[in-house]
Amino acid sequence: MALTNRPRTVSGYGTAAGTGTLAVLILVAVCGSPWYVGWAATHTDPDGAGGWFLRLLAWPAWRFGMGDSGERISGGDLRAVLLVLLAAGLLYLMPAAQAARVPGSLSQFCTGWAAYVLAAGLAALLAAFLGTDASLLVSFQTAGTGATYGFFAGWIVGTASLGGRA
Image 1 (cartoon, rainbow, N blue to C red):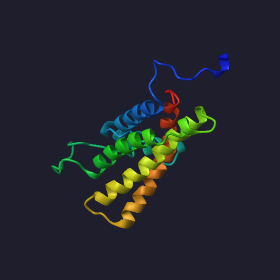
Image 2 (cartoon, one colour):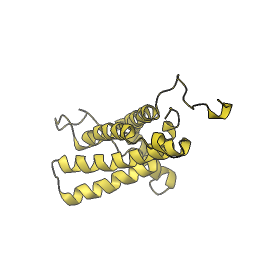
Image 3 (cartoon, rainbow, N blue to C red):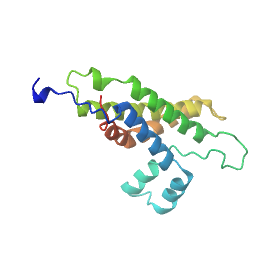
């Protein structure tokens, strides 16, 4: 076997779906945390591109029992949970990196990014539709916001997917 035909897998690394899922967990846990959300709201400029992006990263905001209303899980909490679950599921279900005619880094990157865009849009749609003030219009509007978040933050998950084997 020629040196250039060696498989790219390295036994010490996880799969592309696994590393992408880890990135999703870290992204939602850190950027969705109440501390980051508060920091982004007070220390960033909403009129600048950098501030807008840092505020957008706070979109999957979760509180998990930190509210005064006595609710167990709020709409934001449901959105964050659904985002992690859907992203993990889609990363494992979208085997483009394995089925591509030319397997490689670009395929893994695009698969991770696309999975996160779709997961964010679906999580927003489902969380809004299952929420207390559910309406079809609000669900569609929040799905657009979720897809926007997924598009601008999904490159992080796509890049993390490069760290694993196909």
